[in-house]
Length: 421
Image (cartoon, rainbow, N blue to C red; front, side, top):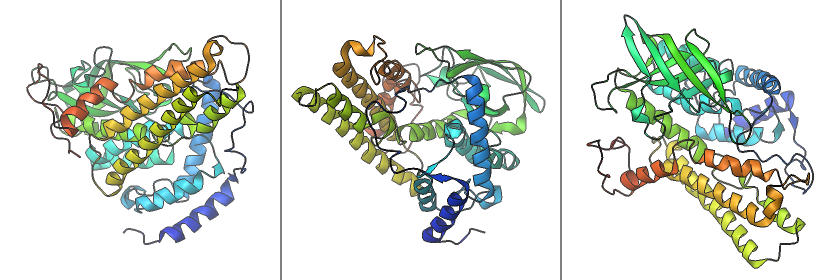
């Protein structure tokens, strides 16, 4: 039975819980001062693995505390451990929680933002009951295993195989660019299950145990120097058939569920809209002032364009998310939100380069200068994550604008069933 509680009553409950378990942020915590604090600007956080383990332990403990108090899955079905409340309740809690000092929660982003919605939409009931409460409580972390060395943007060309063996499937192959694979407990993997069908129709999705025999995770070193991503090898991994997502050879619909939620998470999140974090306006303004460039008309105009790009992305992302909050499925317009994000990040990188010049590439030890190099080196990765810019433009052209599909080996568009805006 769905709980009947007003947003106001719920907010009072949440405030009481947070006051009892966390410390309020200082009003100065969000105020940017040039030269103070950490000047790290990495788009992909790269920390020592031992430090990361400690951060994960703290994050899991907080999620368990939050879940046990009834704030872990606010909109989730009651029979799966959720509260059955509305998106308005969830937004109220998120807004309130942001005022408190809490462990970082990014470790759960892929699992809860992409994998969990796919499990809820496509898994068998007992699989939902087994994994979803544990994921929202923080006991399990999920990973997404889609891309391959020869199948990134063209996901349907993947070659990782799953072959039926009685009530099990045997998976063999390789995935790449898997964020968080080294600390994940379960994964959503897309495999080819029929070599003779057209490439979009011979795929099947599964939920796998990342700690099972037959799974090997290897770190991938990036040009930033870190290893936030992994490649994952499968050598005879056995998966029970009841852990299949959707129908056999019906994996493309499963993949679209995940991909659309991925673009919603990336494009409409803090990075895609607004000017906190990656598009911190205060940081860029103070950088101009620090180097006595705040009266340069060209740089002022460039900064105004950056600011405008993030604001427009915020409003457009809000429009797309309002559709989701109204109960409509995420649509292809979220490809535009992700595309706006990468364009905005590129604009920030170019602006920083114009202001800093050689300071960005020569490590003089000066605060707020060389650190931008990590940002610049991370932007190309963001243009690949969640779909390359080129693929997203193609989706927008075909599914939003209604332009004809480019001629190719496929006779129909793999996105033909997506709703148009």
